[in-house]
Image (cartoon, rainbow, N blue to C red; front, side, top):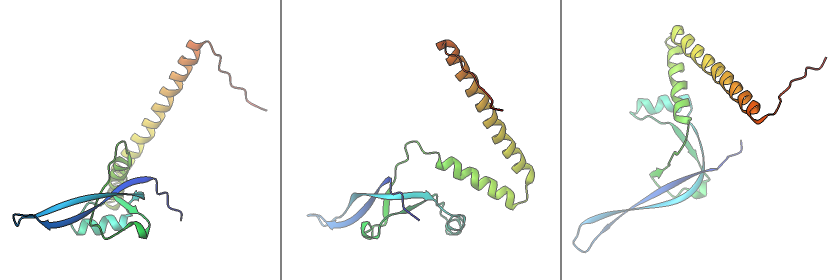
Length: 142
């Protein structure tokens, strides 16, 4: 499987040094690397939950880019992965509990939202082309 490596993450090196007054100061130095950011698998998510963690992402980078750092920075500007992962977890939990009413209602809600947005988009396109004076026609082949 090929890695995408299109996401920028910063691996943070933490160093401790004693200053002139004998106080130990911590310095954080970020280093930019490229990684493949994907969702965690269900097994990783459950294993993390057992340890009190809430893992959401898996960062995969080349071996040579990792130098023993224990922290990283990853900024999500406009990323729908959180919402999609939350939806997957909710549906997985509902199916695991055999709560088919929640699964049915959530699926119906998603279907009707998709249908409604498709109709709305079609109407807006028709209005736009009508305003522009462009005729849209559809011909079916027999």
